[in-house]
Amino acid sequence: MKVIILGAGELGRYIGKKLSADRKHEVILVDIKSEIDETIEALPVIGDGASVRKLKEAGAENADLLLALSGNEDTNALACHIAKKLGIKRTICRIFSDKDNMFPEANGLYPKDFGIDEVLYSVTETVDAIDYVLENEVLVNYIPLRHKDAKIVVINKMPINSEITGYKLKDLAGKLNNMRIAAVVRDGELIVPDGDTQLKTGDRIYVAGMANDARRFVNWLFNEGSKPISNVVVAGASKVSEELMKRLRKRKCDLKLICSNQEMSKQAIEVPEGVITLSGDVRDTEIMNEACINGCDVFIALDRHDEVNIISCLLAKKYGAKKVIALTSKNEYIDILPVIDQMGCRINSTQILASRVFQMLDEGPYCLLPRELNDAGARLGEFQLTDGSDSFVGKCLRECKFPPQLQIALIVRDDGVHPSNGDLELKSGDFLYAIAKPETIEKFSKMI
Image (cartoon, rainbow, N blue to C red; front, side, top):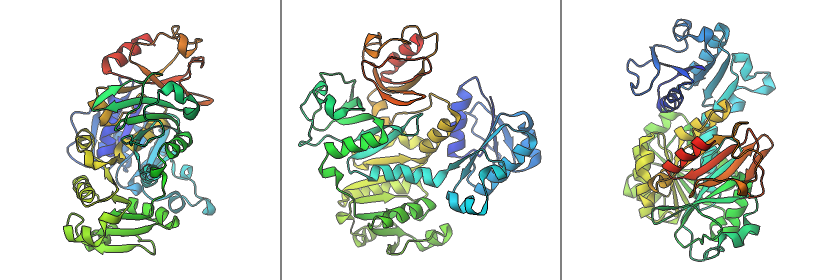
């Protein structure tokens, strides 16, 4: 597939690296900057990606796909329109406005009118990710999978009074229902659980299943953590903070916003009615005290600079915030944040948006586990069974000979998502999500 990527920012580079690593794809990376990351195996085109000349230079006339992922939604939309006129087969456009503002259907405006086949609503996707982990104090992250409603949710340390601490997993089948405890990290070590595994206080657990099932399970498991949040402090003026505050105000949350006057005017956001705005640097002790951080349920750092978000979350946790959420975009921080236990919850917008793009493309395996499991020496692999997968197709899971210490977390097929139940018969076309050490994942890939 010939793919043109417009925008060599964090998202464009990340997707470019993933696609170019797969020899099936020819990648052309277009950016206005004179220097493009040389580690990406892509043909660079320097210039304005919304110009006819540059899109022709990139080969839009015979390309399969345009991913318009720059930081300017007007440039992205115009590039899609021009590329369609030139004959490109498919376009995906990154938009920062919400759907109703950009394409008001009431006025008869649709993305396809602009040559856009699919829209990546950047702000909405990011806010959805933050909103999901806000539902419960113990949720610290989630891993989006191929099916839009399937997730692996990451639950923070098991409390002493948990409903299932000390029980064997095989005795909890009635409570797990359509879910699977796919992995456990205990003292930095990976445990691939089986029926005899017992959960202990302090374990971090990864639960695979449908989003609604996981939500119900977490609320049952942690009664204390299921209390709705009411007191929230948001740091940073951005489109993400504006959209998130609108949602939280609809739930009657008490909100405070910390940002500088310069940041507020530059971002031109609309602060919802009822939000208390505090002007200043979020890293300043006086501002933290004025915001009453020690009494807030959640502190959410949404500044445009990752470093500010990381530092302010560390401070907020120190000053008594019950839960902190740091938004980052740089992928290098994925590797270092988990070593800081106080960080709590980390949302990386680049990986969230990249996962959504790959869902649109139906391409995999590009879903990455959070660094906690990487530190424990684990990987998540996505594998599709074919008619030639004789060792697995037509057999029940319990009949299959999987490598030792490999966990099948979920199976996704055309009719939906299935937990890895021993009685489930595997079919050609199934997508299997497996967790194991890297060498075991590699061994399994050769068996498919």
